[in-house]
Each structure stands twice: as C-alpha cells, then as structure tokens.
Image 1 (cartoon, rainbow, N blue to C red):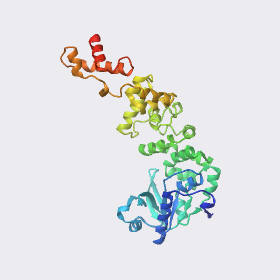
Image 2: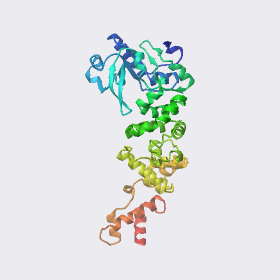
Image 3: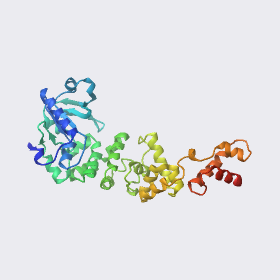
Image 4: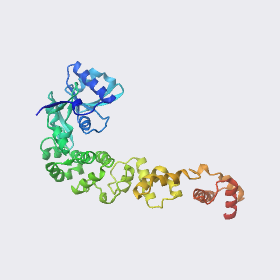
Length: 377
C-alpha cells in the first residue's frame, strides 16, 4: 500500500541539517535521479525524537553520485554505500539495491543495483525503518510502516525466519530499538530471535560491542537487559552476570561490572579505565580514593554504589592537592633534612606524606612536612 502524507500536516519538522538534506534530494532530482531521506530520521520525526543522523537512498549509482557531488566530497564504502559531505554536513547515501547473497549470516556479498524504491525497502531490516521523505517533503509509507510505529511494534520486513538468519546483527538491533524507542517486538520476530540467537557467536566482537554500547547507553536500558536475558542472548554474547549489575548511566561503569569475553576489543584507554573503576569499587570512597582515581572514575563508582554526585564533587573540590607535583617539598629536601644520601626510601616517604596531606592529617607546608619527616623517619 502506498500512502503519502505531507509531513507538515502531522509533525513539526525543521533543523538546519534537515534543510540541507532536502537540498541534497533536490540536487539529485535536477540531475534526473530519485532520492529520499530514509530510515531512522523519518521514524524519529514521527516520534518527536531529535536526531541529526540522516540517511539518503537514491537510484544513482556510486559513480554517478561522485559525478554529481565531485570526488573530494564523496567517500565510497562499497556495496552501494557512500558518504557525501555537503555544506559541512555528512550524509550516508545508499543506491537502491537488492541483496542477492549473504555470507556468514551478516554481510551481503552479492548485490544488484535496482531502480525501484519499494524493492530497495524490502531488503531492509524492520518496517519501522522504511519510511521515506521525498524532495517535496512528503512522507512516503510503502510498507505500512506508520501503522507499526503507531502500534509501537518492531517486526522484520518480510519473514523473520529469513531476515534474522541472513543477518544476525538484526537480533541486537531489534533489542536496541525495543529499548531506545520503548517498543515491543512482535511475537513471530521474537520467536526467531530466540531460535537463531546462537548465530551471534559468529558475529564479530567489534559489531557486538558497538550494538551493546548503544543498548547500554539508552535511557531505557533495563528493558533491553530483560529482553537479552529472557531470550537467552546473554550466553551467546558471552556475558555471565548481566542480571546482577547496576545499570548506571555511564557505559564505562557498565563495562567494568560485566564479566564478558576477553575478545571484546576494548582500547588501551578503556581497559585502563575499566581496571581503575574495578579497583575503586573494592575500596571505600573517601578523600584518598577520590584523589587517587580522579573525579570521573569516582563519579562512575558513585553512580554504581548509589552515592550522590554532589557528595563526590564536594570531596574532589575540597582536596588540598591534586597530584604529587602539588606537594611543597622535594626529594632532595627530604634527604637533606635526614642527612642521608638520596635513595628508594624517599619514594616511600613521599607516599606517606601524600596520603596524610590528602586526608588533611598534615598541612601542605614545607616546614610542617620537614618537621613530620624528622620526627618519623
């Protein structure tokens, strides 16, 4: 069924990036091609969700897109997908296509460019992602998508038995959309997600991690957690304790609590942060631990432990020092006052001094510190 709405009749639209996207559609039209805003942006407009992620589909091939927008403004991703930079805005553009063959339950390895919008929409994952906006700002609903949005239901385009099996990432995408949009997954789609959940074992850890990050960054992450557990997906994601963690508002806090496969590709910085959060979770949250691990890690740990942010903030900004560089004594001063040659003992003394200053048991004044060192060392 082909339904056509003028978007101004049903929603408030606008935004500079949206206006630039409409300009892009009209540029395609002037060159004799069809082009539409497609997917998440039209869906989110109907739901009154603000977003700046605009995807475009067109019957122009990547080569023709390069000819229209010039080489320096177009990057080719392959499989009919390109990135256009137009007036400093980025748009992901895909050529109408039919996916002929999938490999490893994930990627189409054989595609065919086509001229028909509806046939292009039929290859997409979920009906809620098939709305389009044309150059005249009409909302096109070729697959009764608006009905599913009104009913707040996520279902595959076509038979879920085949759509889930051909691309296992759709399992996590369905769960993500259910959480972020607070939608339900229709029963048939749910059954095949559960049946084919094992296919997630073949999905790359980087893709799983990307989707999990989006899932756990949602305001409605609890719903997604319940779905992952009830569908038995957690075992295929190699996560052992999802039911037991605190779903705090920081993704690093969530990563640090999860017992998950070591194959997930965290960066060195992320691994260091996760390690510090884990260590601080095992410590009392006091002035010294706030000083040692810093404000960010402290607030993450506070959110997990249910400690008010203001309390942590007050502790941090009441610290007498923020690093060893702030201590008003040098190693040479210590060796001089003790009349000893410099050695490893100085580091141990500074450790002691540092803790005492942070805990406000010793003033950060040179004469006070020297007096302490003379009396105790």
